[in-house]
Length: 192
Image (tube, rainbow, N blue to C red):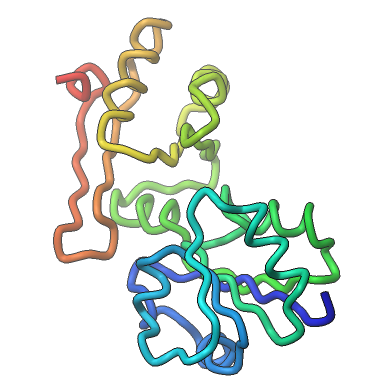
């Protein structure tokens, strides 16, 4: 691999959230990598595209062969439970530059109007619920990245089953979209 890989975070507002520098990097890239919704933001892009799914190894191999600039589009802050760690481990820290954006977690705490300076941030997405339970036992305020609509009720049940029912839940859905919704409720009400 001869060129730098730019990992660009996109905020909840998509392409509109990108800086001038980020937009210029996308335009000059020879290879643009990202999820379908990220790539769809750039229909005018003429270079090679790679749709990121569960094909991380294939992506790294493609990047290693690329001679031009590579841009990897990610959600929010790629260093916060994002793709940055994986790329650094597989390509080396000198090979990448990270340009973060507002993370979904920042956006969620702002929309809930709750400070997150003392919050513990975890993810249940592909990591199981052990870290969620550990965080709930250690912190008064936690932020949890989830991957589907069933997880909030599963998390609430886990917390209640372990005697941790005094949390207030803020369930944030479709952040940055017209259908954005933030619901506030005691943990027992999350189960339904």
